Length: 124
Image (cartoon, rainbow, N blue to C red):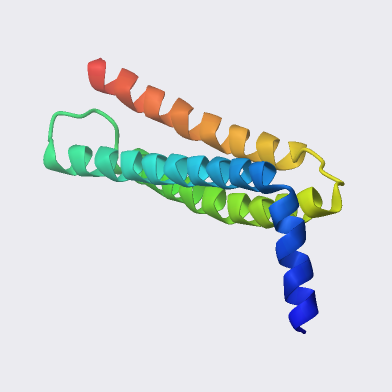
């Protein structure tokens, strides 16, 4: 058991720069998730506190729901990706995660598009 722990630590230490880069990428995804979720809550609160917005409450609620879903999905998928990449770094079989990037980019685009529609409707 002790030999197994030493072996794993040695493999991780051998690729320390790659693992540190993997952690920085993970933390960047977490910051993105927090920001997207926070912006969704901000828009909902601004809409509730102001009576002059033209969008119906249902549209604003969908913006909030989508932003929270985007945030939670980002956290889940980035965590899974982090552990997969750590394993791939140690095994020297690293592959880019194109499906993850496409999914999260599509989700983020939908959130940003809804934010844009919201602010465009507010300006009218």
